[in-house]
Image (cartoon, rainbow, N blue to C red):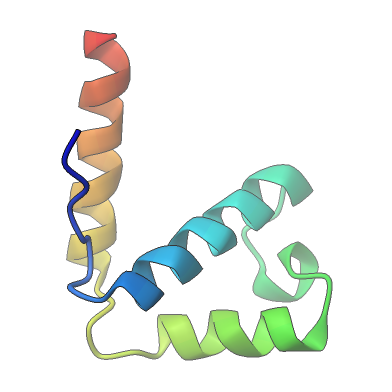
Length: 72
């Protein structure tokens, strides 16, 4: 199975996965509540402030994930 990069940078993709996982497990979309450590919060804020991270790219990825889930 081919893995495609959402943001064009594997490091951003990994941080995106970490952040979404933290938000899902904490039940909060607030970075300060979802991230347990100061370093995790710092990484999350750097991620959302990165010029390569856009709402459009996140939306496209979530749509792709929903389609994949329906097809399964």
